[in-house]
Image (cartoon, rainbow, N blue to C red; front, side, top):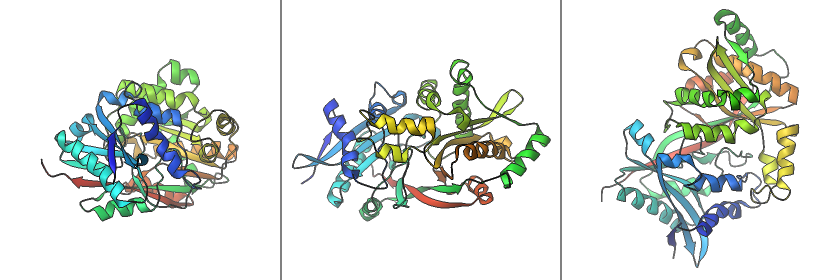
Length: 379
């Protein structure tokens, strides 16, 4: 028999976080998420997303042993923006037992219905910069710290339950870094600079942190991502957290802005891949020796892969080829660091304009993540 228990104590929250590491210990493809980051994201006193979100977490237990977990989330800002009453499920992990997975999602459904929700969808996080989607293809590929990894039985469980349908798919691509300037992006970038007067800008740490340009990057993200699936506008408090989490530790050679005069109209934030380094940590903990492996990547770039984390261009500049300026600059940095591969973040399969740009490089889809939706009957 499966018992569903709501997380109410710090000890239970630690069990909630630890379950992922226990379930995927020894996996060659899963990448441990940073333990302290997981704890901070799930804590109401640490995560500014709780200014617009409500959430509870549930553990599934059998004979007092944790066998699954799930988060139930309502993002009020997203529901207002998309005119819906949706409860999200995220942080969904479970052993290969249909009774366990069904009980977890039933708990989310009941929690949502009690609060007047009429549909449930996921896997989704609090906001769009959290991990989204369930892996449905690419199980043999090394994952990244920015996306969910799950065993192949997960989607089989969801689809066997009934009522769930595909709501949205994301794809991620592996792109071969060109060895020289003989690529379409370089040629387009030269033309764009000459025709429209757009230019590449490389930030200083002072500009990003002290002069507010880091905040401007994420305000630009609000403008460029506003029509994407499930997106809700980032508040100032959420932006400040993202600046602290990402911008402060970024290698600024791997961050690029595009300017039209004094106006920022596009950006690209990329990081050396931490996947192999995190696999060498003890359950996502940097102490006592995990920090050394991570430092080798952040400071010395001892990896052949770079992760394309966040890229955005204002809509009115996309047709002008502004994205080519971003990629042309970043490719030069990747060549200098000796990266052989770039791995994109999740991109909506319906976003033909974004996906079409990869035809100019040697690329292939390596992973697919899916969000599911289910209509909820009224109580």
